[in-house]
Image (tube, rainbow over all chains, first blue to last red; front, top):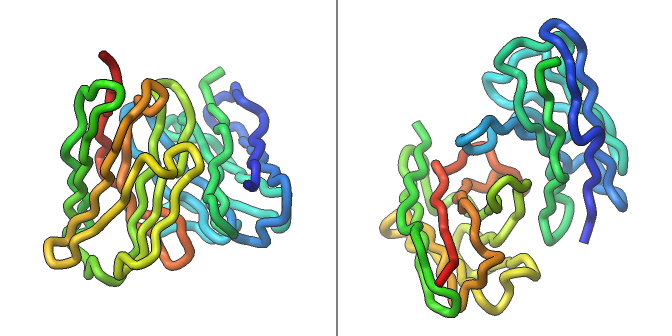
Length: 107
Length: 118
């Protein structure tokens, strides 16, 4: 099973600041890595697929990068609606696994 | 518009059984794999099970293998998760999701809370 480790667990930032979230895989997942955003009481929302492609309707301030074992989600300038929990997920092999999440909170 | 409407959550006793349902609309159901993902209270996401477009291939997380069964009815555009002998640690919100070409999820159901308790 591929383990995904997200860091930091919590990121305290102010609106307008840049957020950099990390996801590290225990073995290579090539580019089969996606990012989701989840707000309380809601289902996750797909943000990035294939490590760097924005899903339909996702604002340009969200970007993804990386391949192999190290991946990054960057939010260039935080908007109030961006404060949420973010999860990475790989889909390179069975079983599919998710990272533990990074909570982006208002400082 | 893609829509996944879940039903069937609730309270179930340890060792009992429960079936979760997910009704799909707004897309050609038989062309997509479907998955179940769960989230224990206050915890992260855990993939549970996948079923292929035709229903012939199924996959399970080790934590539920042998206890849960995923199935689908393409004539009714529905996917199911049968929980046999649930345990307290199976308490979670269960989401159904449409699997995109390579097993990630752009569309999710609203979630259904399953509480396993006596």
